[in-house]
Length: 349
Image (cartoon, rainbow, N blue to C red; front, side, top):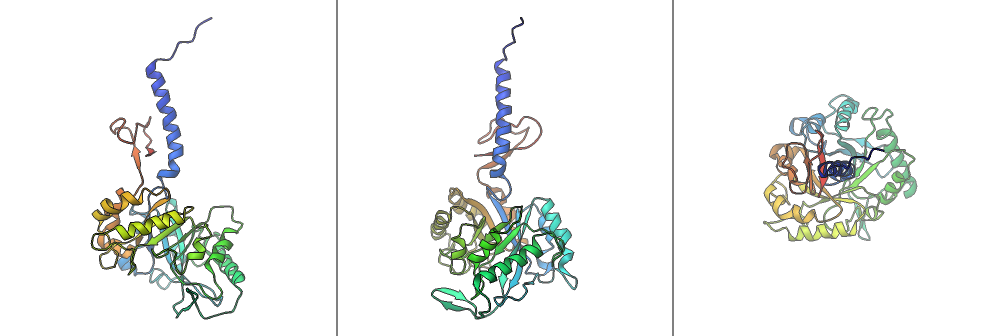
């Protein structure tokens, strides 16, 4: 009987590397792609096309993983929400944007609709903000709003944006009403019978807990939280000092462990809280990435980003310990190794 030839040490090494390549590719894909290990989201829709460009141009820039369409204006009295996208629809129905939305999604960019609220004076009651109307019970109002958005923007059926199936719903930092309560709204969305994943995100200001979105965030149902480290908040970056920002960051990442937490950044020094790109890279991101639920950065907003080219200057530093390793790289480089074959291999540190 012939005795099988024992594999050489070189063959064993190649087999080990092949196994490691396959394992790393499959296990790291969730960590090193999309909105898992250092994604970039951006708000778009409230400035003229001439200043913030088209949705397709945004998605073809290579700078973003998630786009937030602002805004879907909701009303506490139960009337039909209104889609407000500045002049992007022109005199035509906004269904003209369907092809651009589909272009983004085909390029692995998630598209979420962002909820705003009608402008009105809000009443502060027990440290919470409420609008004046009182026409529906809160649970029914939440379910009605959730059903409307799911049916008109996430079902693939005809709606204001055409036959689109958006990836999720964002709640900007807006007050609740007497009827609409955001915690009940996200519970209603989460309880929907959709067979696919619906992403939920929120954009609170950096003071924890947020006055408007605190109860909703405590449900633990949000996938992404874009914490706004700007405006005149006490936790913003000022005069080269990131200590208050990083203290607030730790509070958010510690208290909201089930969500991916993003640094909400302004892309222009015209706004309070601006962090110069090199300061962000050297003073903020290294500490921010230490959080296990670090998600990346959110950019406010596309209009400013086009003027300053902010995202392009920081995007290579946003991912958390991930490298794309392909044949031709130095073998066994820091935190990486060769992928066997020509396909790129993502490796998580």
